[in-house]
Every structure is written in C-alpha cells, then in structure tokens.
Image 1 (cartoon, helix red, strand yellow):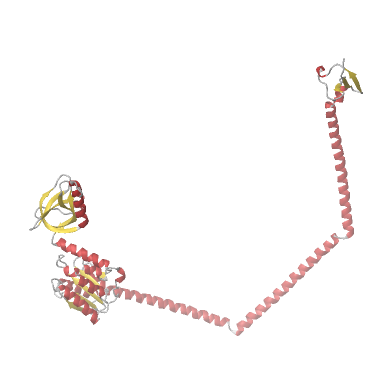
Image 2 (spheres, one colour):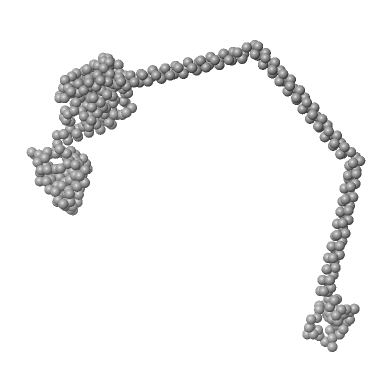
Length: 440
C-alpha cells in the first residue's frame, strides 16, 4: 500500500504531542461538575459552560500547592496544558493551577501587566528618584472626600504643620479614576509648584483598587519628573502604581510619616546641634587662647636681649667644647707617640738579632731531640723487623739441619720424591753452601 497505516496507540500519541505542543499553557474559565476524588489524592472533574465541557485532571501535589478546595458548581479559573489520555483517547486538560473566577481573573491580568512593565524596566531601582528630606510643598493626589486624606492631614498636622499642601482632587474608583489620576499627575508636573507628590487611597477589594493597576497610570508615574510616593490600600495590598513609584508606603498614613519630617525630632536635633556648636566654640576659644599665650612666650623668647644672652651662652659652650676637644686630641697624639716609641724599641736591630738567635737555638735543640727520638724509634723498628725476618727466613730453617732441593734446570723446589727421576741433577742447599747431586 502507498499510504502509512497508524495503530490506535500511535495515533493517540501523535494527537497528544500535537495538543501539548500547540497549547502548552492556557487559562480556561468554567463551572466544576462530576468531581471525583480517588484514594490517590488526585481529582478528576468536568469543566463546563453553556456551550460545552472538557475533562480535567489535577494531580495531588498541584492541588496541595494551590491551597484551593474544588467543589461541584464552583465557577473557577484554571491554568494548565491541553493533552490526551492515550488509554481511552479522551481529550483532557491537565490542571496546574486553580482559583476562583472573578478576582482570580483580575489577579491574572495584574500579573500579566506586572511582568510586561517589569520587562520594560519601569520597576528598575536605577529609575527611582530620591524623596526630598525637607519638602517645601507637598502635592496630594486623592479623593477629597475619602478617609485617606483625613488620615494624611492628621499625620502632617501632628508631625510638621508648617509644610504647605496642594490637593489635586481625583476619583480613586470607577471608570473616571484612571483619566483623573493621569491628568492630576500631568497637571502637577506642569505647574511645578510641589517638590514631591503623594498618590493615596484607602483600603478596599482588588476591584476597588483596580484604577491603580492601569498601564496608563503606571506610565504617567514613570515619566513624572517629580518624585512620587504611593500609599494605596492596606499593608498587604500591592498595586502596579506601588512598583512604579519612587517609594511605596504600606498605608496613606505611613506615606505621610515617610514624607514629612518630625518637628519634635527636628527641635531635638536643633537643640543638640546648638549644644554641639557651643561646645565647639568654647573649645575653639580655649585653643585660640592657648595659642595666643604660646605666641606671647615665643615673642619674649625672640626678644633681642634674650637672643644676645642665648648667643653668649652658646659662645661659652662652644669655647668649652673647643678646649675639651683640643685636650682630647693632644692626649690621643701623646698616647700614639708612646706606642710608636715602644714599637721602635721593640724593633731595634740588636734586640731583633738577640730574639732571632734565641729562636734559632731553641729550634736547634728541638731538632736534635726530634732526630735522636726518630733514630731510636727506627732502631727499635729495625730490631723488630729483623726478629720477624729471622723467624720466617729459609736460612733459619737450614740452620736447624734442613735442606732445600731444586731442579738444576728449572730451579723449581722439589716437594716430593715423585717429582725427581733417576739420573736427574738437583741442587741441594744447606746452611753453609750448596751441592749438586744425581738421583739414583
């Protein structure tokens, strides 16, 4: 056949790979039905809407990490990958994350915008502007009728009521909130009447704070030349505006605390600085007084009369040192002269000849002693050698009646009678003389 035939398993595997490749991660919203919880801890259910349904599987570890308790009839938002269960050929969704719909969808949009702006560099710390330490005028962008403005005014009044305030009224919730906030930031920047801006709002749900998660508001904050501090919602609330702002405060009141100096602390600091200044001035005056006294003493010491007295004393000292050095020099020369005289006397020719004669006589005696001692040692050695030679000499053996027989021709010593033949001539050496004998 000219076409490829697939098995069911091959077809299911190809379809599964295709689905997982085309839909690696998707978000799907729908209602849970036919929920099943086997002993393995995994869950299996159908996700449906008015037009259809899809089988879903969520494994135990994913379910535990989500912290969500699925129930039939709940409207949920799922994240997962589209796949195929090859054993039955069922098209299904493998769920990685599950959360309630509505707020969960807003959270998803929040994360998407956060990632987008982060990649664009709107959250980089290098783009943050420092807040003024002592602001000359503070601009407040908020709702004039909300509780947040009252909290901020109370904090500023308590900490530093002298700071002038400019309120830019805006809507902080609803459709008009986003354009109002963007316009207020642009107006404050054009007027340039404040050196810092506060963007504040009281607490609420994620829907109530949604105007502060808008991309347009984020860009307006990012491009603003004035430093902006945000105080939106409660301590646990985080908005896109917080990430873009130069400084984020957990609450509106905390933002007022951060931006305003504490007058009591400033007064204490001023008092400390005053005390330190007095101490420094007192210390400086004491130093200058000591320096003046020292200069007066120096001036007295530099008086011409004092200089003459000092020079005269110095002259006497030099005269004394000169006399002392002369005496030391003379004594040294006299000592050297005595040494030279003694050396001359010791090296007089007569004394040298006498000294050398004594040395020669002494060495002559030593040489004679050494010669006599050496002769005696050699005599003793010769006597010992003679005795030893006599003991091993053949002549000594001959003196005891022995003789030495040698072949007349070969001169070799005869040790055995077998070594001589009848008629051979042999030499026989005795103590006195030598004989030629014939063997019979």
